[in-house]
Image (cartoon, rainbow, N blue to C red; front, side, top):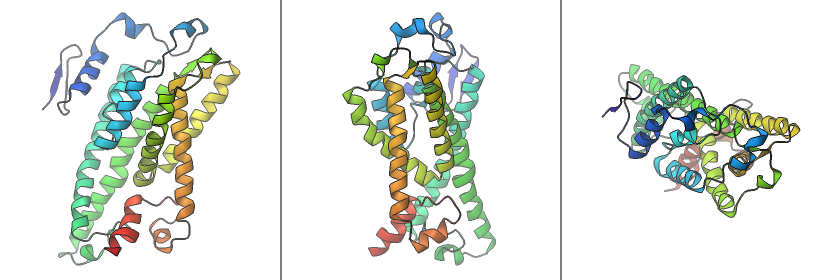
Amino acid sequence: MGQSFPQAGLTWPYNSDAGMIATWSSFTQPGPAKECRHSSVKADEAASTAPFHLDLWFYFTLQNWVLDFGRPIAMLIERSPRTLPRSMIYVSIITFVMGASIHLVGDSVNHRLLFSGYQHHLSVRENPIIKNLKPETLIDSFELLYYYDEYLGHSMWYVPFFLILFMYFSGCFTPTKAQSSAPGAALLLVVPSGLYYWYLVTEGQIFILFIFTFFAMLALVLHQKRKRLFLDSNGLFLFCSFALTLLLVALWVAWLWNDPVLRKKYPGVIYVPEPWAFYTLHVSSRH
């Protein structure tokens, strides 16, 4: 069912979700608090540096795992110290939702195919259950479905997601070095957060997008350091989560480096096997 937002004159075609509705409403309601935040961090804002948002990152990590991806993405935008243009927010979330919807449909079909013997470590045409389809033109339909899920859906889903994460990260700087530390709660959340991003990068096949975002974050940190600006607790949490993700991806690739079947499935310079392909090849085949 669509949700109406009279303040903006829009109807948002998304699921009924109290958290999303409340957050989205906060975007459309004018107020001085929204207008006073600017695109740069000033030295006189040291006293108002945001504390570590334990509730935000805890629910973000929890909902990532439970719901597979971040409906709290809107919460992340709202709490960013740097306010984005509203048109950019609207376009990002619309694209995000459309990509997630495409992926949801394609992924649901893929999981159903698993019960029929579909093997993720093989291409669409090499799967035994696909080879036997009659008429053969149906194979083209399944390849089209695979394209919508793995390429179009993922691109529309992940590009806005990582863009929003980076824009949030760009506002997480403080001129006070003493505030550049992560509390114990943040350190505890780094592991499940980094593990989730590892799954996102490997299963979503978005290593290039991830590494580009991580290097952009690293470059921003070095650039801001010259201005004597340091990451606050939220920026440190996100940066450490990405660093852990990169380490996990490197260990994952090193472990499966010499696997001949997965090498055939993922040719080219960038070799990052999917966990589901590993599962159908080495786990489910033994049962």
